[in-house]
Image (tube, rainbow, N blue to C red):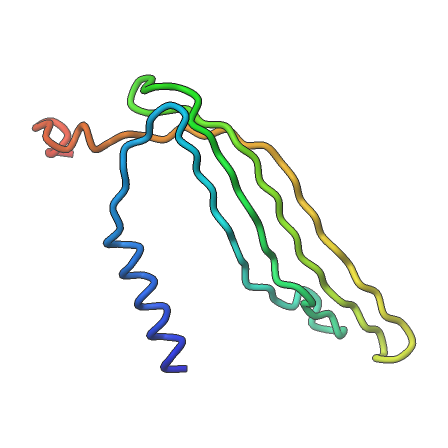
Length: 121
């Protein structure tokens, strides 16, 4: 338990102290995601075989418009679960696949940090 809490703390600090570059046209962003599964149906033996995993990709398609940039991208998610009824008579494996497209608007609020009007908010 102590190792898990230490890992969560280190990841939280790494996220808070990270720096990034401003978005610009033709920037490419990708991320890998993993989720925590859980039992949806507690009355039966319904458990996770493969945790939810996903991949996301994005391309910034415009220079700054207004106070941000527009990006488009896609994502894919996959997970698998096993459903056992009475542990011997019936077994069902369910695969969940999700594929989609996304649109993004990234706000560039760093430009407003030196503005005295913004600092009063």
